[in-house]
Image 1: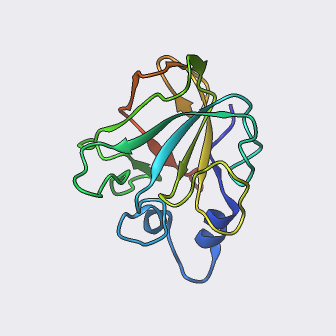
Image 2: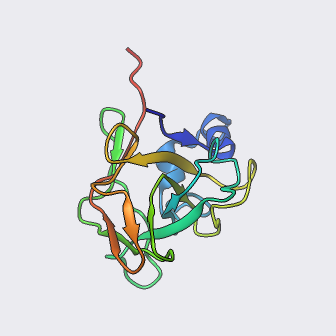
Image 3: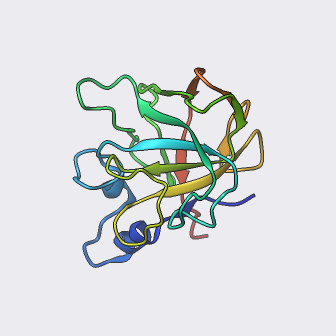
Length: 166
């Protein structure tokens, strides 16, 4: 199983002197961070080496947003972290419509900012998370990885965890 991968920009922001926490970088009120209009992109095809890499020949299958938002607030919202885990707000509905032609297996996801298409190579501008998708044994688990054009894809549970220090 491969783990969740953070972009160079996101890792640098976590380590720089500003003291930004992962929660700060995912907070919808912080301009330019993942929470500010962030979306979860689901791709099919070859998995890039990491979130800094271009997606190459992979196909964007679905864009997931918080559909319980109002107006321009379709942010992916996270609950307060506990025991090294930050989870999707259970009251939010994260959903998108599959827009690829035909049927394709989902292979990886990226969480990106509203301004980031999530497909080009980038190491200095955008905070990104990337993980592989499967029905088991990966960071992204879907009950069925085969996504069909026009179908709805809902994400009921999503969490980000950091390893313990012990």
